[in-house]
Image 1 (tube, rainbow, N blue to C red):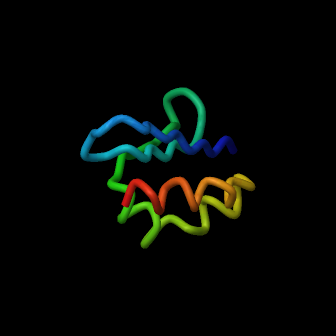
Image 2: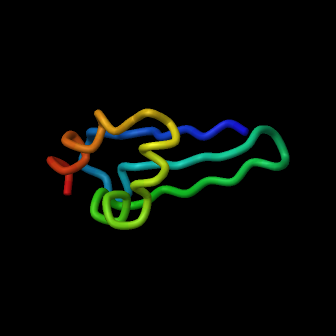
Length: 60
């Protein structure tokens, strides 16, 4: 299973994107920085992307 996190540092309403899977079985969503911090913290642990949290907090 592939799990990715993408961050856009431009001024957009949903700068954080989560995606899971490959090809037709893939799913994803774009969320606000606040939503990413509230609901998606487990994804940061799974992808070893805890280092992104301070940057996302600055976007929130």
